[in-house]
Length: 233
Image (cartoon, rainbow, N blue to C red; front, side):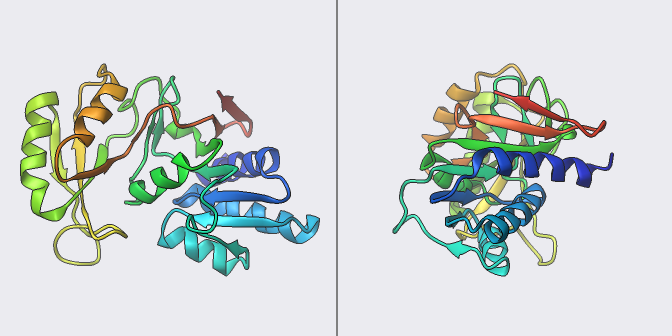
C-alpha cells in the first residue's frame, strides 16, 4: 500500500469514529489532514451533520472553506470537542513531534482547547523514540530577533544541533503564519525527558512554542503498509 493510501485509511477511520453531530472540530494541518477533511465533508453532505470547524493554519482554513464546511474560530468557539491532526513522529508514549509544516503554534493552541486530540498518520511516523525515523528535527518557533541566543542556549543546555529553517520559494528564513522564525533541533539526545525539556525551552525569553506535544494526544491512528489501521492509546 502506498503512503498516500495509508494516510487516507487512517484519516477516514479517525473521522468516522470521533466526529459526531452538533460538535466543534479542530482541523489540523498537513498532508494527512487533507484526507480527513475529504471524509468530513462527505459525511456532512450525506449525514447532514452540523459541524463547526476550527482551523490550525492558513492551509486548514483553505481546506475548510474550499469544502464548504462551517468555519469557526476560538473567539466564538473556545471549547472544542475534538481535534484531528497529523504528526511528524509519534513515540511509544504518544509524545509527538509536530511543526514540519511550520504550523505548530496554532496547532498546539487548538489542541489545548480540545477535549480530545486524535492523531492521524502513516506507518513511517510510528516510532519507539522521537528521532528514530524523523530526522528533520524538533521545530521551535521563536521571535526573529532572538533566534541566535535561543539557538545557543538550547544547544548549551541539551546538546544537538539547531538550524534556522530556510524558506523554499523565497530568499532567507521560513516565516510562520504568525510572523516568527523556526529553529529545527536535530541530532538531539533521544533519551531526554520531553516533558521537562519542553517546559525548560518554553521558559527561554523569545521562544514562542515548541513542536513537542507532550501528554496532549488522546489516540493515534496509523495507516499500515498491509492496509490495516494500527491504533495507539
